[in-house]
Every structure is written in structure tokens, then in C-alpha cells.
Image (tube, rainbow, N blue to C red; front, side):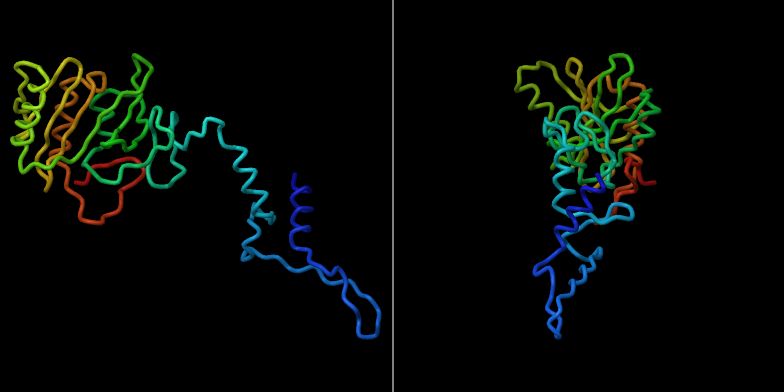
Length: 241
């Protein structure tokens, strides 16, 4: 393969004419042009330089036929920004905002064996491997445009009752002052105070027990809000203290 690339590179950099006329009328071979890393037509692989077009084509052939992007169906950290994961999204993206979520603390509180990663789709989803079912489970967080958690919870209650869910009502979260939570069938919601914007948390019951989520919600409420423009603390979401 390297021999093929070497021949391709030679063909790329060899110009014409192949010989120049000596001033005495004798033909002498033209020296082979020197190619360096600065030449946009080539890329380095180890100690060798290869034609950029050939390398690009090889990379395209390595992509899965499904066209799925990195992090789709499998955790991936090659972007250098986050551990990326989504069960089925064709091209997952890292969450752009910070929410005070701490993956390690949540994993311990909820008893999951593996944090799979994050991705954004309408809200930020944090995924864990659910040992009992063998499938991913999630906790999702977003910012909501309300002045207080009480206002956010009341608005959510009205929307759910308008969907004919009679008696739906949020309640204060035990041990987390100012937070409210609610449930419907196997879905749960909570509204967390402490930041300039209210954070809404949604999760499936398989994601965590009520006892575990009380620890998670308390951790979210205690997390410090990041300063504007602050960089992430690492590939794995960690709460600021």
C-alpha cells in the first residue's frame, strides 16, 4: 500500500518537461521537486507523505454504509469535546450548554455500570447503560423560560391537565428547597432552582430510583453556574463546585 502511495505521490509532484536543455545543448534530467508538509497536496502519515486526494478517498471508504456519524449507537470521544452518544441519531452533537450535571455522581447514585455519553436533541440527553434491560436509559435537562421553579411547575401542570391527565400536580422535592417534581406513568419531571434560568429535568423511571434521583437533584441544585463563555471541564460532564 505504501508503495502505491509512493508512486502516486511521484506522479503528483513530477512536472513537465521531464528534462531541461543544458546551455551546451546537452540534455540533463530535471531534479525531483522537494515536497514538504506545507504542500497542501500531501498529508503526513508517520514518516511518509501521501497525496491528500488518495488519503481522503481512503477515509471515505472506511465510513459505514449507513452514513451514521460518530457517537451514533456507540460512545465516541474522538471529537475532543465530549463523550458523544445517541442510540439512533444519524449525526449526534455535543450539548452546547452546561447544566450542572455530574455523570460520575449520577452513575453512583443511580447504580448504573456505564456512562455512555451525551447528545443534544431539543434538550441535552445523558445516557447510561441499563444493566437489567441491556438497553440505554436517559436523563434529559434543558433551560426553561420561567422566573421561578414554582412558575415553571405550575405551567407544566396546566399543560399536562390540558392533555386530560386529571389531578396532575407537581410537589416539592424532599430535601431540595425550591425544587418541584411530578410524575405520569413511567415518566418523571423536576424543576431545579439556583441558576439564572430554571432547569427542567426529565427522566424515565428506569434511569434511577426515587432515592437515587433525590441525590441527583440535590447535586444539580448545589452545582455552581458556569461563568459566561467558560470552557467545559472535560469530556465527561462534571459539576462545578
